[in-house]
Structure formats: structure tokens, C-alpha cells
Length: 364
Ligand SMILES: Nc1nc2c(ncn2[C@@H]2O[C@H](COP(=O)(O)OP(=O)(O)OP(=O)(O)O)[C@@H](O)[C@H]2O)c(=O)[nH]1
Ligand SMILES: [Mg+2]
Image (cartoon, rainbow, N blue to C red; front, side, top):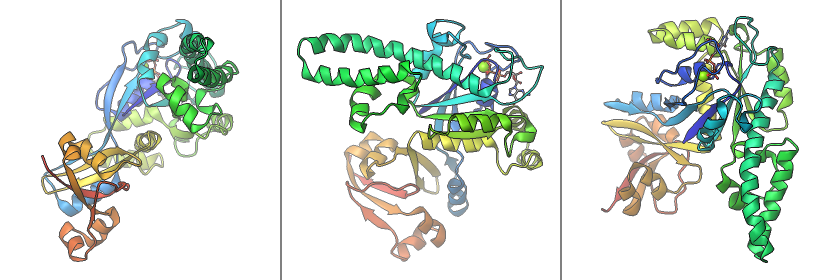
């Protein structure tokens, strides 16, 4: 699963990328510092994993991960080739969700490509570029479908009608995700096109240290502007958090965070939100060798969940032994859960629940 970071140049995208991932991207105070995309793997922070580690005391712990892609900044005209962002929009098209970074801090020393600080304008600039890019992809498809529809192909006519609806929405500067379509129409005709503004989005307001907890007027304006989008807005002091990640010890980092009024890094909150945005959930395996979080789609069955570990587990699936996370924690160990008769045996149809601790039985 992959999330892509978009935004104007010099708003803190690479700095954010560096807060999230161990891969270090170059970040500097000039527009278009990033040219080649940076790709990093980010651990998804999960308190349940910490708890399971305490209880099981395994040799190692492996968290769930999300891939993050940081691209060049987009500017007005990017969809038509301005700046550098356009050639990298392809990298964004391959992602599953968008993290849109918006500058919400004043600082005369940090160059803004459009001179003044106006987060709502900036957000619209980016939206419009992404929408124009989508329009371009959509029109290519429309051309083809139109020809098929002319020959009397009923299916093509149906598709054409749906595509037209979306084209009109895009031309009215609305994103694809906001277009009024039935789930079936979207799934059948729109999802395969991988349109950028169809992907779920999360807004990150990059603020100064003193606004890290409550935000500021810029954040208020962004929230007001997106209130109908049903999208999450996260406040993050990106520059400060980048400084914090440079500190050596956990204690030092914790002290610094407390100092600015945070219990945990905003970057952790962001990653969890992205994970949720990707409609992912976690189940665990908890053995003495390894406690591990596995990523599955919400709604996946037990064999599908087993398949994430190994395809043989799915093919040869016999049954799953399942302990609800809360039972594992309240009884304290697998043995005690079994004693209490709280371990369930589930078959092929079982839909895995978030936090299930699982063992699979299979034939190879
Ligand atoms: N004051 C302040 N400066 C910041 C903050 N976040 C980033 N910066 C600075 O802004 C400059 C640009 O940051 P980058 O992360 O390189 O920006 P970018 O969005 O990746 O820029 P491009 O790659 O050029 O598109 C750097 O000098 C950062 O140190 C912040 O929250 N506050
Ligand atoms: Mg950058």
C-alpha cells in the first residue's frame, strides 16, 4: 500500500517525508529541491503491538508498514508541463492515497512560490492541476468509448454516460472523489482509470511549533474550505518534528514533544490516519519468535488473511485459530485464553476482525 505526498514546492513535503521514513530525502529552502521521487517505507505505530510484545516477549517485533512517495512540488500549469511536478504525476497515479501538504506558517526566510501565505489558494492550485491531469486521462478514455458507443455498443454507451458525468464535474473544478456516482459505476468505470483526484486524500497543515496543538487561523481557513469533502485535516509542525526525529534517545524526543504539548509525534497520528484512509486493518501473529502485524483489507476472510503471509497458507487453508485482541490482553497469554475457552476455531468464511490474533492450519 502506497501513499503519495503532494503540494506546492518548498512547503515541507520532503521534511515531512524525513519525519516519517528512515530513508533520508534532501530538503532545502528552495523550490524544486526534490527532482527524483523519494520512496520510503514507514512503520505504522500501533500500541497493541507494544502490549503484545510485553505479554509474549518475542525475539522480534514487526509492525505493519505503508510506502510513502515524495515527489517534486507542483505549480500552476504542472498538468501542462510547467515546473517539474508533471513528469512525476505518474508516480502519484500509482499510489492508493494522497497526502496533501499545505503551508500554514509565516516565515519570510522560507520562499513561497506564490509569494504570499494563503493556504486555501495553494490547495486550490494543487487541486486544479490534479483535476486537469485527470481530465486529460479521462478524455483519452472518452474518445475511445465514444467510438465504440457509436457502433451501437450498449455497454460502451453506459460507460460513456458515466465518464461524461465525471468530465463535467472535473471541468467545474470538482474532484473525481466528489462526483455523484453509484458504487457500481465508480467501481466499474472510474476506479480502473486510477484518476488522482479519485484517491482518498488527507490534508496536512504544516504549522509553526506554537500552533502544533491547536492550529492557527490558516488551519481554520483550510478546515472551512474542505468541510464538505469529508476528508481529514491533520495539524503538524513538520519542521519541529523533523528536529525531534534527529534527537538520539526516546527520552529526549519525548521531553521535546511534551514541551510543545504533544503526547506523541504528529507524524504517528498521520501514518495511522493514512493507514485508515487506505481501508487497511491489522491482524496479529504472536509467537515467541516473532510478534507481527499483518495488513489486510477490511472485509478479508481468514484464507485471504493467511495469504498475506504466504500464498500456500491461502491455497491449503484448513482453519484458523482466533483470539480477539482484548481477550489476549485480559487473559494475558495464549495458554490462559485457551483454558478459559476463549480461543475460537474459524473456517473459510470467517471475516477477520481488526486486532485478531491468529494461527493458521493448512495443508501444502
Ligand atoms: N519554518 C519552517 N520551515 C519549514 C517547515 N517545514 C519545512 N520547512 C523548511 O522549508 C524548506 C523546504 O522544505 P522541503 O521539505 O524541502 O520542501 P518540499 O515541499 O519538499 O519542496 P520541493 O521539493 O522543492 O517541492 C526547508 O528549508 C525546510 O527546512 C516548517 O514547519 N517551518
Ligand atoms: Mg522536496
